[in-house]
Amino acid sequence: MRSRKTTLLLAVLIVLPACNSRGPTNYYVTGIQIARDGQVSAVGTRSVLETRSGKNYYYFFHAAELTSVEHMERSSGEPEAHLALSLETTPDGRLDRTVKKNVLLMGDFGTIYAEKTLFL
Image (cartoon, rainbow, N blue to C red):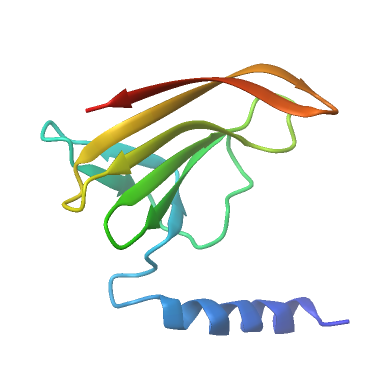
């Protein structure tokens, strides 16, 4: 069984090559900002590890032609966060589409959502 230090060192060695001089390309933050022109940007410290503190966080995923942002929300007493809102951008980083999800029912079977999509 590996020690925590060895596991952490292995994680760093795997993640570091994926980071460029501006930092990681896929990361978690505590907030987002959407400018008047629709430009979506991260707010807060970027982390490659999912946050376990707080109720809300955002995951930025950069692909070849778009960036997607997932707003994860943790309800009171819930151990796991659920997807509340997804945003997608155009290649130049402007907001292109939003998908809002509302939890209708949760149980041993999983979670049932109502979904609303808006194309800009």
